[in-house]
Image (tube, rainbow, N blue to C red; front, side, top):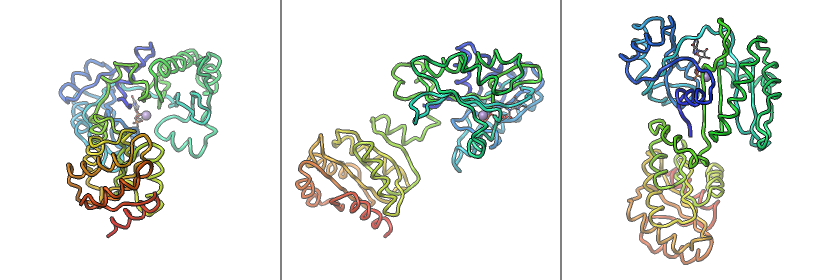
Length: 387
Ligand code: GDP
Ligand code: MN
């Protein structure tokens, strides 16, 4: 689960880390008051959306008076902000964070995330922080320094120390950097994060070291341990269909293609998406209906898939292992009656009682094609949508 920058900074502050003084608002009038309250000549107005690259998209602007803060707040609030991470449709800005403007000396990068290959968290830092860190990672990975964190020991002070010195920070700021890195680890560990990222981490002309930006992603599998995290969820930032699907406990991820997929099991869902691509089309979604594919889950699945206007056909690929295929077929027939399906439908059922299921589907009177195997199913649906 992603959260906003201002929420991430609230968490850092709770762990005793210094953050720039700032306030969040959705109102340009209030932005003026905030300017006065902050009390520095320069403030920075920052769009709060769940995507990075805001600076590049015009979502981070400096203001030097209450009036200018008001003008910029009016411009940013309500804008459809397009950044390299939002996709071409952008994201609507509903909140802004206004902070004291920092006289930046240099921008650094620091983050803790899970290295899936090592199966351990890593602390990563770079002296080439700021808006082009993705380019740095791609073209000069040697500029990114890492320490592998032993999960049972946690980040060690010597590791934080090594990276603080490696950043060639002014020596009087080493202590602050070490405290910051140790704090980031505590946040990552205690809040069950999958990412804690500070980009940029800055040194200022008045000799401070501060996180100018903060991004935190929580591990969804640990959400049950943190009631306060759910209160930070902002569903306006999520795909409405994904939010709808999560109400029915369906694992649905919207994608850009036009073949809707309904599958049981995440592995089979991935394989189905691959084979659709192999057959020459693109999946419109990932959808794992789970082990108990029944009338209700299949009905909800069809409804959600069909709410996506890009969907030109549906491929149902279900393996009857725990549930028998004839029961699933009954569910599909009933669900197809519940939700009128006006696009081509191909169904492939494999497993226990697959033949009975096939006969049921063929006799159901519902317009659909059955397939024996994955390849045939994918080829059929791709052909049907190309008609
Ligand atoms: P992002 O583009 O979404 O990652 O947003 P950031 O919060 O990282 O801001 C982007 C850039 O705006 C930073 O890399 C800074 O260069 C600049 N910026 C942000 N806050 C300030 C500030 O207080 N003072 C100055 N001078 N620049 C800032
Ligand atoms: Mn940033």
